[in-house]
Amino acid sequence: MSSLPVSGVLLVLAGVVAGCKAERPAGNAASAPAAAPAAPSTPAPVTITATDFKLDMPAQIPAGVVTLHLVNHGKELHQAQVIRLEDGKTLADFSKAMKENGPPPSWVKFVGGPNGIAPDQEGNSTIALTPGHYAALCFIPGLDGVPHVMKGMIQPFEVTAAAGSASDQLPAADVTMKLADYSFGPSQALTPGHHTILVENAGPQPHEIVLLKLSPGKSVADFGKWAMEGMKGPPPAIPLGGLGSIENGGRGVFTVDLTPGDYGFICFVPDVKDGKPHLAHGMIKQFKVG
Image (cartoon, rainbow, N blue to C red):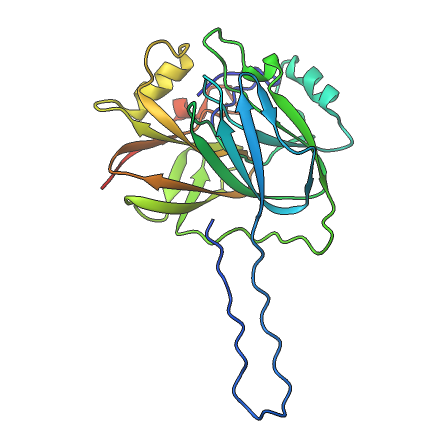
């Protein structure tokens, strides 16, 4: 729902863990019990608090699967896009790259994070993090057109080696969403109630998923136009989060509670060929719940 020249790139906005019960197999009491299967670990919770214009979160996070809870205490829309800085690059290197034209440098990897939510709302995403240097940031622009990251809404953090073996098993999901160039492919229709959605990027380009609840009589295209033309007037939809941009092969999970109504998905990530947001290539989807 925004535009930002991150190396000439527009970016925006945008669990249920299967338990195991150990059972002792039937047999002679003298025989040794079989080892119980290991239950999947619960994702470590991390709270990110957004204000205008700051992200507060821990400076260090143990490696493994983590659930990032974004709480928006600001007066504007905010997200917590997570990036990984590779090849020994620093936040200073990233800040310099943001001012240059061209595609994002290869050492910036987009790994998800909670996508845009409205003021006084909460969002979440569960992703697997490996040790290294990261940052959470908000690319969404204000009404003045200045992206929040340019106002200091970026927070570096380090992912440290876990004390034990780090799990990379994401929570079990009831819906799988396949992202491609340029489509959203849900495994089944969304219904009223609570959903855990696994997002997988099968497209060669990075993609995001922004979940919208549409205002009466409005469309996903209306929201895209509103977002790209300065966010003037009341929004034609309320963003409910989703998953921030992920690379090809990337995966992440987010949860949402849906009520009956009209909804949509949209992707604002710019195309590597022409720089146009993917919504301009048809990466929008409208659907009804209930």
